[in-house]
Amino acid sequence: MSDKPNSSTVDVSLNSERIVRVMFVSMVLFEVFLVLLDAFLNYGKLIEIGAIRRLSNIAREDGLGTWFASTQTFLAGLTAMAVWYLSKKLDRERLYVIGWLVIACFFIFMAADDGAQIHERMGTTFKAIAKGSDGLAGSILGLSPSYTWQLLFVPIFGSIGLFMAYILWKELGSSRTRMLVIAALACMGTAVILDFFEGLDKKHAWNIYAWLAENYELRNYTVWHFAKVIEEFLEMLSITTFWLIFSRQLFFLMKPVEVRLKVSGQDKE
Image (cartoon, rainbow, N blue to C red; front, side, top):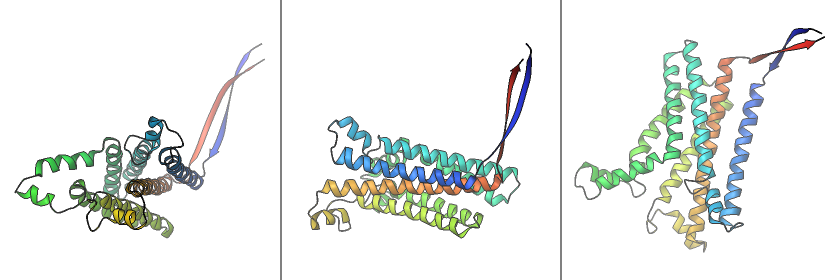
């Protein structure tokens, strides 16, 4: 009996469009699942155990929703970083190379922000410093009736969003993909607007949540909670859409993807 080495190769073709489609649908279905989990387990009190209800509460920052949002944002950032790397290696136009680096860094920062609540805590810090001040900080603090973080970060995030929209619009030739960019930005913008209303005082004239509760005889908590759920869902849907866009661009730069596996073994005689 003798051993003879045996090896063979297997060609595996990857359908990039199918991969990104399955990824997108899977992420959206999971986001819908998180909303239903919140509605039935948390708000509907299907389970009375507080720990389980908090885990499924999308409105909280320490549940499954935050974990999922932070993870997928980080993965979207890594995908954008891969696009930047390939763009650099392919000697593409400098504007696009820099643009993809900015986009990648922005999404990676947002992933950290989701997990550590950076913008909320920086807003609270600024408020503590500026409160009672007669200087510039105090004047800035009085400009917004809602959350303080919006004064600091919305102009920055908005500027990066416009820059990102410009880069993606120039990069993407497909009108369908460009519509996805508009949809993703619209979802994120709507989430920010909902967050603005959430931060208003209950007696403020612009507080549509208080108006809904009063005119439709709803509990304040019910209106606030489901508005927050919609806000978080829109944020997750926006990131999922951006991830889809980044993945398509990555596969485009990679051209047809072919994976060749070499299997080695031994034949015994």
